[in-house]
Image 1 (cartoon, rainbow, N blue to C red):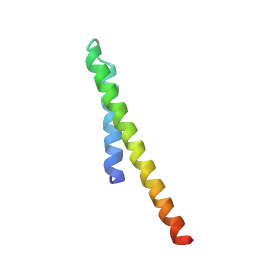
Image 2: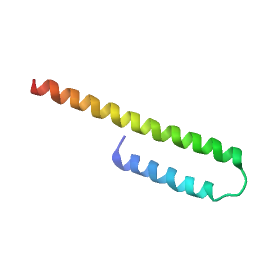
Image 3: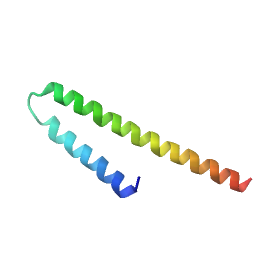
Image 4: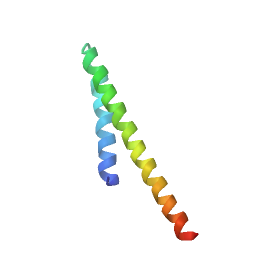
Length: 64
């Protein structure tokens, strides 16, 4: 993922969470939306950790 795209996705999710949290009612929708948002954040973190681990492993092999 490009960092600009990643930043836009995170920004959009945070803004949409703010809008959804201000709504009265719709508790089921809020719960589902928060779960999906949390899953996306976890996925982004996992992808970034995987890339970091892969890059550091490659750099370590090049040095040694």
